[in-house]
Image 1 (cartoon, rainbow, N blue to C red):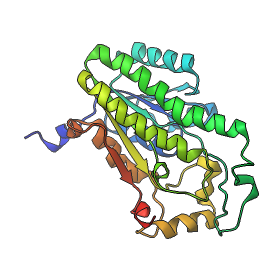
Image 2: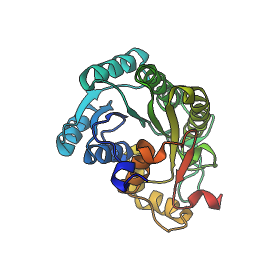
Image 3: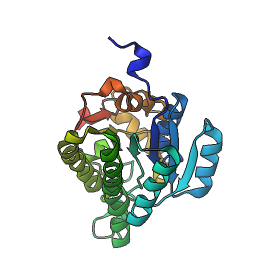
Length: 268
């Protein structure tokens, strides 16, 4: 039996993290770098990207990227492959919020979140980043991993893919539901090439998404009430699961959708 250190070893692996400048994506980048991987962080927030790369250090580097741009995604993967020699592990994490829900955290109707008030531009942007962006990331990861005999693709979805969320903007849920199906089908197709595709489905975590709304007392309280543990998670708490899926310990895991939500989805 392999030693524990070998089971969870990602040292020397070439890693890409999209949306890695903050929140859950930053946690992915940190845990990979902390365990010796060579990490490229891709993000559309250039200023935050520069700060995060400087703070993580350990050879981590950054590249500006809008994951909804097919040409840009392909170019980013090619650049990482040239710079790091190959692409071994990809975290398809970049995402945006879906605006306000049709209810406020206090349970009142919110006119801005009604289905007939959602701007079409909002819908298009959420689908472009949260669904098409994941497709483009998986597409280019597969293109490179097929050439080198396999790899790991780990997608950030959400419990919102399968539960009803009245205080979360409508476009977010169908985008994440599409991500769940995409992961399962990609896993079916790519397993023959040694490419494992899995999904992490977080519940509420304290991040900057939606303008950092979970740092606000009313929003935070609404989500804390859903959790069986009575609290919202910190991004540090997702690192163990990320390392597991990226490491040899998960060598027989593909097509999985792993929930990390403090039991909140059990209440729905």
